[in-house]
Structures are given as C-alpha cells and as structure tokens.
Image 1 (cartoon, rainbow, N blue to C red):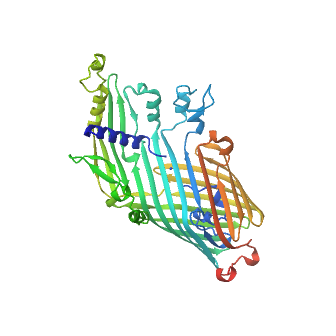
Image 2: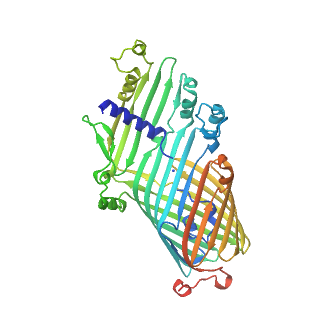
Image 3: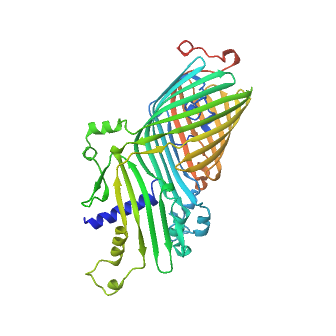
Length: 491
C-alpha cells in the first residue's frame, strides 16, 4: 500500500468520524416513582426503597438501553417501497421522499444519542432512618451532533450556498465508556423531609470527543470555485497505538500486540484496569409539605473524568482547499498513462490538510441531569406524579416531561402507566411492571412501550429490565413509620 493510499484511507476515516460518527446515560422517566425498585434511588438518592435490604443479581439486576434523536422519526429514514413488498431508506431512488419536508424537520443543531448501563454489583440496606446503598456499574454514553447545512449539502447540493458559507461547525461527537463505583447515603430527617447524596469514583475505559464549540468547519461557494476550511481537534483515549509515517505525520491506529495475539492475562488486566480517574456526585431532596403531596429535586451525574496522557491521542485536522473543477481531457482522449483526474483531485484534497497528533491529557463531563417532580397519593395503593428532566450532554440541552399513574393493587404487584413529552414527540406512552417482592423481585420498564404500536413515528426507544433479591418489604404505616434496625427486623 502506497503512502498516498494510506493518506486517502485515513483522510476518509477522519471525515467519517467527524461527519457520521456512531450514535449512544438517561434513566427511564417512568422508574422515578416506582420506589419499590431499589434502582429508583439512582435518579434521586434521597428516596428510600420500600424494602429494608436488597441485593442486585450480578449484571441482570439492571440492564438499561436508551437510543434516539431529537428530530427525526423512523419513517423519516426508512419507508415502504412504493411498488414492492420491501423497506427502503429515504436515499433510495424509488423513495417517495420530499426533501423540503425532511429538511424543515431539522434544526440548526441536531443530535443522536445512545446510552447503555449494567450493574455488576449492587446492594442496599436500612439502619433506622438511614439508608445505605452501593453500586458497581459499567456505563456507555454517546452523543453526536450534526448541522442542518450538512444535510442540505448531501440532499440538495451546494447551489443554495452560492456566495455564502455552509456552516458545519455543529459537527461533534462525544462517546464515553467508563466504570462507576457509587456509595449512596439517604437520611430521613423527619416524616416530611429526606435528603440523600451519592459519591462516585469513576474510571474511564474509552473516549472519543470532538466538541463542536471548539471546532470550525465551513464551505464557501462562488460561481466557479468551492473553498473548504477546517480547524478541528479530536481527542481519543483507548488502548490503541497511534502510528506515524517517516515525516512524523499521524497515519492511524493499530491494535497493541497483546490484543492482536489475544493474550488472556493482558486482556484481563485491561478489563480490570483502573486508569483515567474521575469523580461524580448525585444530590437529592424529598419533601412532603402536606400529608398526601410529595415534592422532590435531584441533580444526577455531576462530575468529570480526566483522561491520562499515556493512552491519549489528540488528532488535529487543519487546512484549506480550493476546488475549481476536474480536468477530464485525459479520460476523453483515452490516455492510460496519467493518473485518474479524480485521483489527482483526492490527492490534492488530502495534501491540503494536515493531520497531526499529540498526547496531552484532557477532561470530559458526565452529562448532568436535573429532575424536578411532584406526586399526590390518591389512596394508599394509588398515586399520580409529574416529572421534569433537564439533561445536559455534549453542550446539548434536552428537556422531557412525564405524567404517571402508579398502582399497587396487591402485595407483590406494582404497575405504572406514563405519558411523556420528549425528543420533540408527543406519542410516548410508557409502562412499568414489578412482580414479586421478597425474596425475588422482577421488573421491566419503558418510557415508550407504545413504540410497539407506532414505532414508525417514534424518535426514541428505551427499556430497563432487572432482578433483585429483597427482604423486609412491607407497607409502612404510622405505627411502623420508624423502621427497626435492619439486623433485627430482617434477619
């Protein structure tokens, strides 16, 4: 493989990473008021579970997946073929696709996201008015930004940008895979007020970050030329080894020998590594101004991870390119002695940009969330609630609202029905079900179970599933409002 071929391949990879990165932690809104699930404390550490003790089964105690975007429904991307029994994308030549309607659905800043979480170990117990909990979790979170101008260029060409700039600055990606150790403490001050805090120690596994606020991408079109300008940085942290050519320019990544050769001991050490340390904190308050009304506030995932320079590669893409057309005279004349004019153009394009790399540590945030909620107990077995979530991630602001009804008809059975406004859609009907209590509890929750009915109009999907072992689960009354110590009441 020649050096030019390598540069072409790498340039394509860089552009793909910047323009079309991979789509990815948000908790289920419906979970918030299902406090018989101990994992509800992850959304507000002031809440105390109904059971005096729980143990989360490894891995399966909590499996959570959340994917979506802030603008497009599934039918905007995939649709029925007009004459055949098959599905096609909106880019298919036979698609009945209206470009104007599609672009009108986009904002200046659009994004995709994906979140995944699993708890490797979790447990909690009550001691009088205190509740202590611990979790060891693996979390993956990704967000991708893309501008409307990029989609306009792809679908309509550059004619609408004659004598003006196509602003591609909103391009960005933030993907983080990390381990979390959390210790939660909740205190019931009195029957009307509870407070909670969870301190978290974090260890980063992988990260790729390209913040659109720090990058610049523009394309200017005149009557006879196109001018491209780029000044961007991609920060990465991974076990991959950065390679350079003889001139010291960055070429790409390669696997370290212990991964390529599948050396078991080294792979285990990699999986158990505690590098790239960070800290996080969750704060919560739970207040009952009157007997049946409860108000709550929590701030979740306030924290950071510092990525150490030993595994860091900072990739800088800088340069400008002027395109004035392609000379195809050699192709018309049938000459086979010269390079293809399009190869010459690609060579010129890649040579116009410099791709260099350094190794300097950097810091990323977790994506803080603010929950504000209120619930009203219609009876001992039925309550209604409202929840607002404000989510900050990769400089995005995502707002969601949820209304829920929660019922506990008999011991060992709880259910919740919710309606959410989120990601620009109004058709999200959620459902939550809890089976059992002591000693085994099974739960499944989704904010948009309605996707099974009209998934083609849904812009996001999430679910949460898990199993817990629990003891001391009982309805609290005025006679036993002050719980006995766990060792006496449970064992």
